[in-house]
Structure formats: C-alpha cells, structure tokens
Amino acid sequence: MVVPSAASREMAPESLPLGIIPTVDMSAPSGRGELARRLVRACAERGFFKAVNHGVPARAAARLDAAASAFFARPTQAKQAAGPPDPLGYGSRNIGANGDVGELEYLILHADPAAVARKARVIDAEDPSRFSIAVNEYVDAVRRLACRVLDLLGEGLGLRDPTSFSQLISAVDSDSLLRINHYPTSAAALRGPGDRSCTAEDAKSGNSNGGAKGTIGFGEHTDPQILSVLRANDVDGLQVLLPDGRGGGGDEWVQVPADPAAFFINVGDLLQALTNGRLVSIRHRVMASTSRPRLSTIYFAAPPLHARISALPATVSAGTPRRYRPFTWAEYKKAMYAHRLSHNRLDLFHAFGDDDAADDEHS
Ligand SMILES: C=C1C[C@]23C[C@@]1(O)CC[C@H]2[C@@]12CC[C@H](O)[C@@](C)(C(=O)O1)[C@H]2[C@@H]3C(=O)O
Ligand SMILES: O=C(O)CCC(=O)C(=O)O
Ligand SMILES: [Fe+2]
Image (spheres, rainbow, N blue to C red):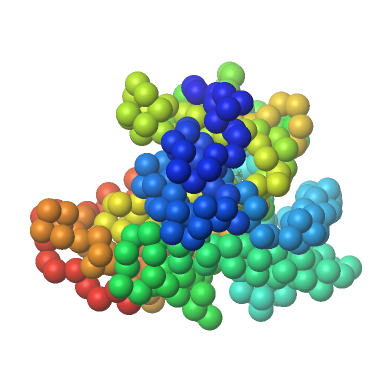
C-alpha cells in the first residue's frame, strides 16, 4: 500500500512530473494545449486524476449532498420503497446480481430528468421536485465537466474530430447514470444476523462475505462507461491499483486522500476501447471507514445503448492494431451484468489478431 506524501497532494504546474495522484488544474493556467497534454498523460499513465478549479458550483454539490443525506437518514423501510435496484434504485450491501457484497447502501439513478422525476416520487414523497432539482442541477454541472475533459482528451490525442467522445455522452438518449454511495460507520447497521463483513482477501478470492480486518466498502472493479466523475466528503477510502512499474515494484493499491472540493475522474472501459488501449480504465475499490461515514457521488458518463464502440482511427496504426472488436454499449452492458464486479470485462471483447482498418470516428 502506498500513501502519497504531502508533496504529491500539492497542485503541480502542468509541465511537472505527474506524481502518484496526478492533479490537474482545469482553469488551464499554462494554456489549453498544455492542459490537453497533461490530461492525456494522466489518463494514459494512471487512468485517473484529481481535478481542481473544475467549475462545478459548490452550491450544486452541497444541495445534492443534503438531499442524499436526508434520504439515507430515513427508516430502512422507507428507503426500501425506492428499491430493490433493478439495476436502478435503492440497494443495500448487495452490488449487482452476481453475489458481490459491500459495506454500503446506495441509490443508482438514470441521469435523464424524466427518469429522475419518476424515482423522486418514492425517494422524497413529501417534495419530489426538491430531490429532482438537486439531482438535475448537479448532473448538468458534472456533464459539462465531463464534456470539457473529453474534448481536451480528443484534442490531446489528435482526433480528426476532437468532440467525438463528448458527442457520445451528450446525445439525448445517453445512458449516463448517477450513483450515490453511503458507507455508514457501523456496517453492522446494514447487516442481518449472522452476516459477516467482506475483507480485501475475501474480495480477491471471490468470496465477498468473510470476516477479519481491512473491510471492503466496494470491491475492486473498473467502471464500464466512458468517464466517471467522482466527488466524496472528507472521509478517505478510495484506492486505485497502480499497474506494475507506475508506482514502483509491482501492482500496488494507492490510497487517494479525500478532498471534498475536488473531483476524481477516471477512464472507463469504453474510453479504453475507443482509444485502442491508449487511455486505461483503472481498477479501484473503497475500503470501509470505521470512524466516520463516507458519502460519495459518481456520474458515469455513457453513450446511448445503440452507440457502436470502435477504436478511433487516430489510435490505430500498422504498429498498433485494433485491440478490441467493435461492439455496442447495449452488448457491453449485457456482458457486464452477467459478471462479477471484479471481472475484466474488456477481455471478453479482444480482437485476437483482427487488424482491420479502423472505423470512422463517429461510431
Ligand atoms: C456486479 C455488478 C455491479 C455493476 C454491474 C455488475 O454486474 C458489474 C459492473 C458493476 C458497476 C461498477 C460501476 C458502477 O458502480 C455500476 C453502476 C456500473 O455501471 O457497473 C456498477 C453495476 C451496478 O452496481 O449495478
Ligand atoms: O464510492 C466510491 O467512492 C466509489 C465507488 C465506485 O467505484 C463505484 O460506485 O463504481
Ligand atoms: Fe467505480
């Protein structure tokens, strides 16, 4: 386990070394070109970065947190009216439908305002529009941030159309989600009699319901979508797996120090496929805290279900043949829901020597 030093937490000018946890100043003090290059470096070498001066109003974040905290403070029975997750809705401990368990409760919402309005009726029966307004305002702000990041990545990668990625997530029928996770201090509050907590060792061995130390809040996985935009309160817990050679000495879990004013942005599986592996979808997990509850919100920026995901021409060459066969997001989602959280889903879509010419940039 690597705990970054205070120096690596400080904001670095765009040209300085990345550091274990790259920090990117989205106000572009060194110019747009430098910002685009730094984002590409961070997403290619780490798969994630911490965004500061990101432009998301603190008021939008505070309003959403207040609405979420009010929901999680409700009696269990009232919360269950918004579940079970199908896969949208309220869930507790069970993650997905394949036996994964974590020490959390959560809400998964489709980011579309009509879907939010429908769910708001059971989430805040007293004043559904209060909940919808908080979610819609927040989603608008984080979608804008995600689009800015994707456009800069498109520029930095030299795409023929640098807006190719952001177009996918801003389509009216985009399948983006908002997930709000609540990790209570007393995990026992979520468990029934006889249930045990899930440890890092259990999660590794596929048995996510064991005992002992190092309790897993949310087991290791990659995010399947294009880009994930995460914000959490001041409670640590998020860890990322730095692949061999990047942290020095083998794969290593790195603790990401909490910063409620920042966003933590990671590459999803689809962006790895669209860039032919140039940008990497990083494995991450959350360890449960024993002292204070953690509240986190993640916007998963996704394309429409029918979108065809195929490596963009700028990322395919004779020396770098296509790594994944083209697929639709609907096809990928089907595979993802059929597997455990920790499964390497992109492996299911390997091209195996198929080095056809790349498709058009608009998939
Ligand atoms: C075990 C599962 C939960 C998950 C769907 C899956 O079958 C595999 C991917 C999981 C994940 C991880 C990132 C997001 O939190 C999530 C909403 C997603 O899109 O993929 C979850 C899914 C879920 O909790 O439904
Ligand atoms: O709750 C968190 O901080 C991250 C959880 C996560 O990775 C996810 O929901 O996909
Ligand atoms: Fe995740």
